[in-house]
Structure formats: C-alpha cells, structure tokens
Amino acid sequence: MRERFANDGFVVIDDFVSPEARAALRTRALEIVDATDPATTSVFTTRRDAAARDAYFRESGSTIRCFFEEDAFDERGSLRAPKPLAINKIGHAMHDLDPAFDRFSHDARLDALVRDLGIVDPRVYQSMYIFKQPHIGGEVHWHQDATFFVTEPHSVRTLWFALEDANRDNGCLWVLPGGHRGPLRERFVADGETTRMERLDHTPWPTVGTDALPLEVRAGALVVLHGHLPHYSAPNRSARSRHAYTLHVVDGAAHYDARNWLQRSADFPARGLR
Ligand SMILES: O=C(O)CCC(=O)C(=O)O
Image (cartoon, rainbow, N blue to C red; front, side):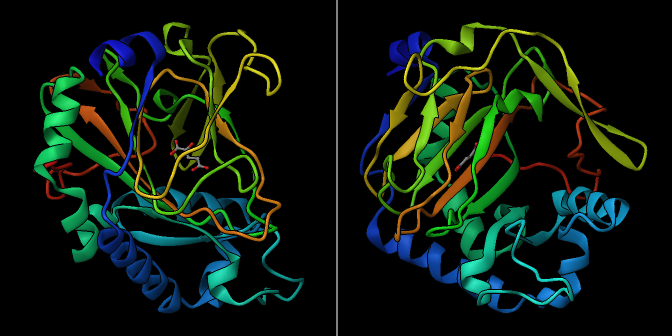
C-alpha cells in the first residue's frame, strides 16, 4: 500500500467503514442540518455580502456550520428546496465538537494508517460532510489539498470516506495518478479579513477523457490522497446522492503556515487521530 501511495499519490481501501458507522454519520449529519435555521445562514452563503460570507467561512474552522448549494436560496433568501436536499456540506470541526463525528474520526486504524504513510504526529485540522445532492450537487473544481494546508515540509493527507456508492453518474472523485509529484499550483491564503487564491505554478490541470482517472468506489471505501494530488468531482446529475465524509490531517512535526485560512487557537488545538 505504501508503494502504491508513493507511486500514484492515492490509495483505495475497500470496506473500511461499516454499514452501521455509515448510517450513524448520515443520521447525525441530517440532525445537524435539521437544527440549522437557513434564514440565519442564507446571508452568509450567498454572494450578496462578500464580507459576511468570508467571515462565515473563516469562523467555520473552529465550529460546525452548514453551507447550502449556490442556488439554494431565492431572491428573498428563502430555500427553494427542503433543507436536506439543499445542503452542500457541513464543516469544519465536527471531528472535535460533535460526539458522533468525534467517535468516528478518532480511530487507532486511522492513526496507524497515516503513520504508515509517513506522518509522524497526525493532527486533524478539518472535517467535512459532503452531500453531493441528486441533480444539483455542484462540481468541485480541480485542486490540490495542500493549497489549503501549507506546511513545511509538505504533509497534508486527505481521508475521504465513501458513505454511499460513488461512480461517474453521481459525481465520484477523479484524480491524476502520479500527479502528486508535480508542483503545488495554488495556495489559498488568509489576508486580514479576507481570503484569496495565489497562483504558484502554471502547470495545467488534468482533463477528463485524457489523463484523469475516475475513482469509482463502493460505499464503505476509504480513499487516501496525498496533499499534492490533483483531484476533482463532477456535478451530480443523477437521481442518487453521493454522501462522503473527509478528514484533512497534517503532521504536527511540520511547521503549519500562519497564512493558512484555518488556524486553531491554543485553547482549541488540532488533536491526533487516536
Ligand atoms: O467529495 C468531493 O466531491 C470533493 C472532496 C475534496 O475535494 C476534498 O475533500 O478535498
């Protein structure tokens, strides 16, 4: 597995998450959505007020927030679809703040896995529950996760858990095998009250139909990605959702960059995986 990861920049482990664990996460995610008042978040998750939107996003690094699909709200800020079908994702500290996600995210198997892949002192900075809704689930553009988690030396690993079958129809991940050996193309920096993307390298992104590979996996699979591996997911135009849960883990032995958007304070440090 280590060799495959070194060559390809990713590895797929089938049957990692039990059906019971998948069901528990799904139930809890829907409870979180149910408890969210979309009226209070609409102003933050639409384009109308960029400053409020930025703040809502930045603060989410240390709490649990719901993000709705871009077109979920009408002109008056009301949801066009029921909440469970309009939600895009929940982020970004459920693994620390919600008991069900905390239980799932702290697992000796995960700790051993990332250590085997070269992380000396695993620290979980971010969790996301991604819904990839039927028909309207949006595209996630090509990116590398190290763009959002710069450390010196480079260290971020992504743990992506398929909570449902993921295939080309419902918007599975696509990757560029071996692409982790290429340069980091962009970095996302916090600059005072705002955030911005900086271009670091002009290497083109992969393309579907030439060099990109679809990662079609069954519910329960764990996909591990190297932080420099380009990946993307297409819009979901099918009638089936594609729920996934992700953790982003960096090495506490590496220097965590002060310009990363997600910063943890001394009284809320990023914990390990055990
Ligand atoms: O699940 C997806 O569609 C994209 C997830 C992703 O890109 C990530 O977790 O870095």
